[in-house]
Image 1 (cartoon, rainbow, N blue to C red):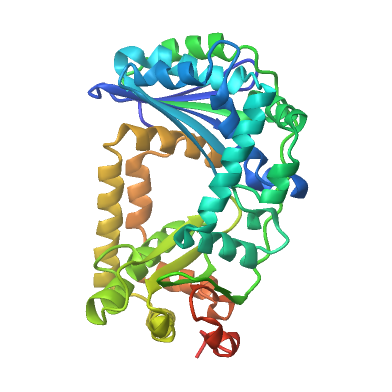
Image 2 (image 1 turned 30 degrees about the horizontal axis):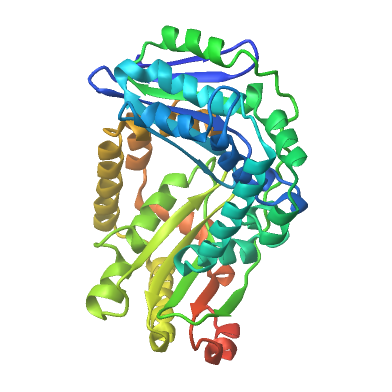
Length: 424
C-alpha cells in the first residue's frame, strides 16, 4: 500500500480516502453517492440524474449563480455526472483552495434547497436533454443495446430517464430520494493532490456532520444476458452499428485479460478492427471497441459508423475478427504489444490528478480499499497466452453476440440480420 494513500471513516459512516501528490499545483476532490439508475424503481427512471441536476439549482446558502461562481471565480472547475451504478460530484481547484472546493461539494450533497419554480424549470431542461439524446445516434445506440441485452433488468434503463417518468416526477419524490440516499455509508469522499489527510478529514467531519448513518443498502441482482438483433430505422446521414457480447465484471479474475482483448479488437489505431475496417477498406471514419464494466456484469461492444450500403460488409469484418480471435487466440507478440499499450495508458493517466481522484473513489466503492497504479500494472503483466485462452473460452460465447443498427434504409436488412449468426 502506498504511503501516500490514507483512509478514514467518519462516525456517521462517510468514507474519506486521499492520496498525497506533493508536486501537483491542484487538488481534485470527488463525492461519490453509491446509488445510480439501477437502484431506481421502474416508475422513477431518471431520478438519480434528476437529483444531480437539481442540486445545482440552489442550496440553503447559495443560489444557482453563486454555486457556478464559487469555484469558477478561483479558476477552478465544478461538475457532476450520473451512471447506472453511482453519482459523482467533483471539483478541481488550486491547492490553496481545497477547503473551498470541499465546502462547495458538501453544500451540494448536504444542503439542497429545492424551490417549486426551479423544479419545474429543470424538468423542462431534462426533457430537452432526452430529446437531444434521441438526436445523437452515437449515444442512443448504447441505450438501445443495454435495453435489449439486459431486458427487464434495472441495468437496461436509460440514465436520463424517459419523458413519461420525468413528466410524472414530483418534487416530494426528489426530496425523499435525496434525503434517503445522500447519507452516511452511501457516501465516499476522495481527494488527490498536495492535501494533508488529517486536515482533510477534519474538514470533512465539519462539512458532512449532518449526514446520518445509512443502513438501507440497495439490493442488486446480477443481470441475465439476452441475445437480440434489432434495427431502428431513422432518417439520418449514416448507419450506426453496435455489436456486443458478455465480458467480465469488476470482480472477475480475468478482468485484465478483457482489457487486452478490447485493446486488440478496437482500442486504438493499431487495433485489428481499426486497421481492417478503416485503414484497409475505408468503410468507416469512426470504429472502436469498449469494455463496459459493472459490479456484477460487463460487456465488450464494437461501434462503427458507415454508409447504409456497407452495413453487411462491416458486420462481416467484425464477425471474421471475432471468429479469428475465438479460434486462434492472441499470439505472444500481440499480447505484449497491447499489454504495453494498456500499461502506457495507465501510467500516463496516473499523471492526471483527476484520474487519481476517480481511481481512489472507484476502488473504494468496488473493492473497499486501495489499488495502486503499480499493483494494477502487475496484474496486467500477468496476462499470458494461457490466461487469454481461458478468458476466451469462458467469455467469448459468440452465440450471445447482439447487434443494434440505427440509421436510414436499414429495414431491408431485417430478414438477413434476424438469421445472422456469429458462430460460423
